[in-house]
Length: 100
Image (cartoon, rainbow, N blue to C red; front, top):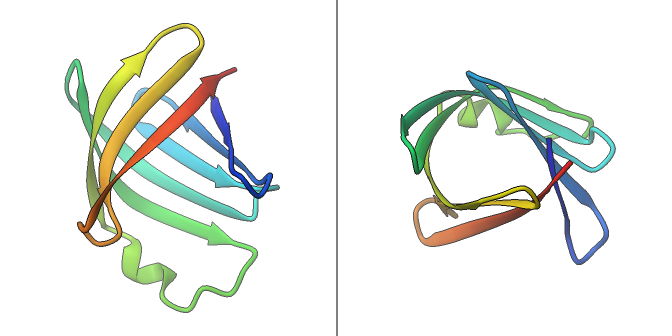
């Protein structure tokens, strides 16, 4: 599991297994489960299979089936860093996660 803390103090956790990636915001406020496919040593792809939310998100089902390509920038004992296209392909986002 890897964890990041936002400026607002909310936690963002990512749990990786062999074939899945689970993203958890806050105290299980939003949980996104994706199947994961390793493309090579530095790239993997995810496809959202399930979204669970304690919030009312009217269009959350629109994201099920969405695929995202991720590029691993750094992976060591302390942290895991990857980038991906976000905001509907307008920006590149970077996640810096502390390993736990």
